[in-house]
Length: 338
Picture: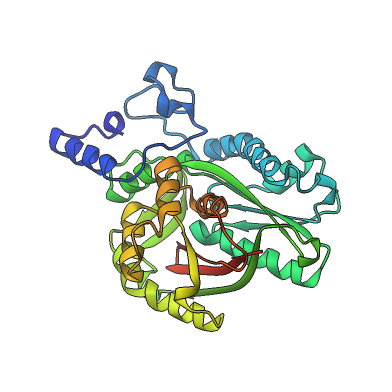
């Protein structure tokens, strides 16, 4: 970023300050250039101004090359020892960082030799809350088809969309987002697998935040807008949202043993912490995920949920999850350990 943005000394100090206080230690990318000297770049032109700047077509070509093997690796890690590929009845692919038709779902089907009659659906361009939307879809399927085994895979290659103009939106996006993939298997209750039981979903839109978080297509990639007002909105509105969600589920805040919040950024997690007046450590799984991989859009909350599930949970313990995205949309779920 320092090289491409060609910032002055004062702006460079600000950039380094933002990185030091981001709460992120590591991020990952399918683009090797970010960890190489300029002479070893393979995706960006070996020029300081990155001209000719990679087009949307070039970025989607790299998405189509990298997203499928990353997704398959996540799926194998998810179902190993639990289900075979032939037993999967539904496949839901989730991404807001790459699209094509035929797309990721068919690439996965071919690579894994999934049943050709498997039910496929795609959740595209919904942003960081899309994993919860996919969970909601899978839950509805399992409620109707008791033998269903629904595989969800969220694959986000956010770093494909680096932009070279040093606007505050581009700087914020470039210091927060990373690449990753997460898969989750949802089954009907009759399978009696140990795991989480999805009990309730609830969502709301904060209309006044519509212009503060957006994701737009452009000829040079996808453009993210993420204003500094988002944490303030969440601090004001998140606790009332949780109250309404729990009322709909006939549950109480004191019953929540674990909180699983989308690791969207340190300021966002801090705002949620203040809004809910939580004890220190209550959002540890989200903070740890942010520190280890950064913000990986829709896959992020599943990374955090995995950490929650690795705790010493006892039957009946309730977990509250939430993620946020363009709109400003807030999606939540309530689950308990089964």
